[in-house]
Length: 346
Image (cartoon, rainbow, N blue to C red):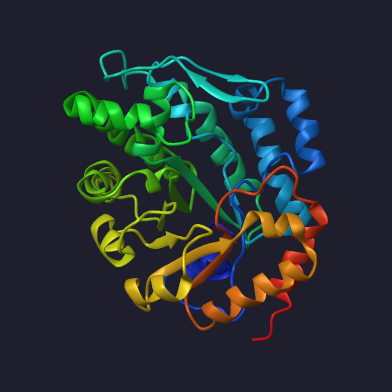
């Protein structure tokens, strides 16, 4: 029998809609460039993709913030654009500029045939982590949501307004739908394999939800995420699923009901009280400290953390940022954040 029992894990207790006097905490991008030990391992690996596909080194960087801060959860070190690459789209990273892909306008050149074989090192990393993490630490797997990933695939890079994807969706909805459908199917495969390898929670990152409204939001954000979650449940994947529709301009109660997520990630702009009123008492909320406040530290950090703790007291809540931790974050400010959370009175 495994030594890891769900009752040991605070994050899993909260994801069953239980409130905790001291909430679980983890941070998006908690394994990253703000840590000197990460920068050293990244240099050893060579390129970013080399690091993602090296299970030994990917395990190491995933464990680094756990060793330093003892977060309640560890999120797999990978990237949302590994799926397009596994489907056959060329992917590379430009130093100082981020990811680049050969732009596409339909799914004609994509194939799921070898995708899981291509992604096998990621599942190896998950399996390693399921054995090497502390018994009380929950392992989170993830994927990018289809709209967000498709926006990179169509533009060939990140864009400030997702205009290329919006243009294609308006000009040739069927072609864009073919990309979304491919991503839905591949994401179900990918996330199911992560769960099979040992991931105890899954998160779907919809980083560009804010660029869609109305019917477009329903078609390109809500329907694909709902299809992924439904597909995972149909395969018997019963781990909790966190949806993170960053800055979505919609009623969050309707969104949660439509996609059937177990928890809702809140971005920096979200009003916790308003969202709680929309989603009800049982929905687990995650978030939403401003990453720039974590950079600033000091009294500003203390006040912001205490405000979130006051608003979420006696509710099922996971403390996190409203977006990923940024490279200029002083590591000592994360130490202070942990002290503020875990020193909170019951």
